[in-house]
Image 1 (cartoon, rainbow, N blue to C red):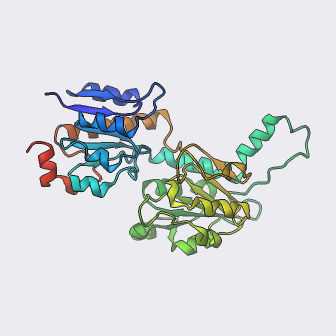
Image 2: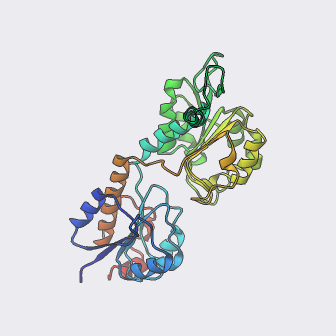
Image 3: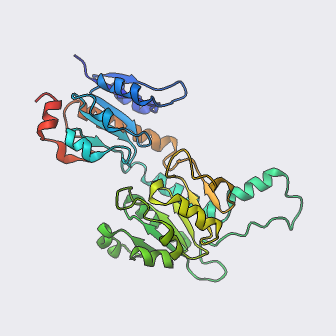
Length: 342
C-alpha cells in the first residue's frame, strides 16, 4: 500500500513539485480560495494519512494527533510551532518538524519595514495623501521619530527581545542607522555578550533604555504576556514597540491602553493574540501600524519554506530522521517505532 501525505492548505507549487517526485500519494484538502478544513474534516483526512503538512497558523488539536495511530509525523510550514502541542506529540511518538533558517532574512526585513513605517507614520501619511485632503503646504505634518542619530546627534537605542536567528539579523540591519543595540535573551546571554556592537540587558533595563523595542522570541509558557501593563509602563513615552514574532507575547489589551493613554509613542504589529481578530480598538488608533501577519510573505521565501516542509515530510514518510526536527527525542521511542511498524 502506498503511503499518503495530507496537505490541508494551498501549498506553493514549488513544494507540490517536491511531493509529486516522491513515491507517495498526496492529498490536498482545502477550499477553492485556500481555506483550511474544519476539525471534523481534518480528522477524517488525517485518519487516512501517514504524514500531515500543516501551516504554523493552523492549530492542530490533540484530537487530530491522536486520531491516527499510523501517523508518522507532522511537518509544520513555518519556523514557529505554537500551533502544535509538542509535549503531547512527543508522548504519542509523533515527530514534529519546522522550517527555520529560510525565513530569517525576510522576517528581519519586514521587522525593519514595520519599525520604519511606524516611526515615520508612513501608512498614515499615505492615506492622507490619497484622501485628497492635502491641498497645500502647511497641512498635516506627520511628525515622526528619528531612527538614526538625527539632529540631536544622539544614537537611538534598539532593544531586541530574543536573540535567535531573526533577532541577530535585525541587529545587523541597525548598523546603517548607527544605533546602540541592547538585547535580552537569558539562554543566549553568552552569545549576546560576545557579539560585537550588542550589549546584554535584563528585560526591565532594556525596556527603560530603548527607543525602539523589537520582539523576536518564540512563544512559550514563559513568554506569554511577557510584555504587559507593568512592562509597558517601564518604556519611554517616546518609545515604539514592534512585534513580528507571536501575538500572545504581548498583552494586547494592555498595549491598547498604553497607546490610547500615550504611555508609549506607537506600536507596529504583524501578529496578534487572536488572529485574525486584533483587539477591538486598535483599528481606531492613529499611533499604530497593523499588518496581516506577512513576516515571511515573499514569493522566494514562502517557496523555500514549502520545499523544506515537503522534504521534512518525505523523510518522515520513509521512517528517516528529518533535518529540522523539533522533538528529536521521539526517535527510537516505543510509540514511534509502533507507528512506523517496527
